[in-house]
Amino acid sequence: MEKSLRQTLNGFIEYLQVERNASTHTVRNYRSDISSFINYMPDSVRDGLEPPKAIEVREYLAHLYGENSKRTIARKLSAIRSLFRWMYRQGFLDRDVGKQIPSPKQEKQIPKILSETEVCRLLEAPPVNSAAGLRDKAVFELLYSSGLRLSELTQLNCDSLDWFRDTEGGSIRVVGKGNKERLVIFGGAAGKALDTYMEKRHQFFKNIDAALSEPALFVNRFGRRLSDRGVERLFDKYAPAADLGRDIHPHMLRHSFATHLLSNGADLRVIQEFLGHSSLSTTQQYTQVELADIIRSYSRSHPKAK
Image (cartoon, rainbow, N blue to C red):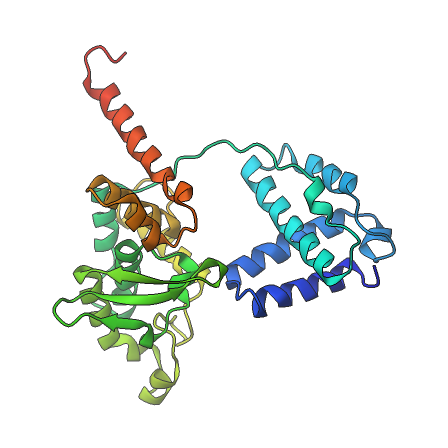
């Protein structure tokens, strides 16, 4: 190795941003996970005097156990493997060290969702007598109507929306994970909320010229693109008002979107296309949600269930 690991990390991050078109959220996670790994490595490895060894990676993973879930450890290992794979392709390593590290066995987790009633309460929580409230309602409506990822939502521009002629809904062409493009549809309720918000969007700016020059669809109080964290704060803000009684996050609306479609008869492969999953097995996790609901319903209702 000719460069320190930190110098190599900077090159890898640039690769993610430029060639992979990774989202800000993804880049931030990769940088954080890999930086923690680099800090754990011996000075000789950090400074690029020696290549990282598989046993050192295993020691780092063992260090993580106890304070991190298997899911978190698997994510961190995935980031490290991606770095090593890139370093090998760039000629910084003689071999791909990551291939020698087995992944921790994952416990299957059923996605957390909101019921249809809970979703309705959340959608009605934002006040509609202010520009901010109309924006927040449009954010919630669009997430639930389309199944967009959070990073996909915050990257939308005003010209991203393609309205249908005969209904109040429309479509969005989204570039998702892996730089893959897909068509996302939103319904009439989301269309109405977006249309009403767009009429008041100029109130986030000092003047109309500033409003016209900012391409972002959703903006914050300073007239700049609403960030992922900004959307997460909206969920923190409205969860009590919606009387949900638990922490919720944007991805729960994506999970709810898929589960409610499946429950109401949508084909699994259609849902796969909506969500942008490369593998049908990823989409099939939502059938487990349905099964869990069936089991709970049986346990509550059948006289001999217990």
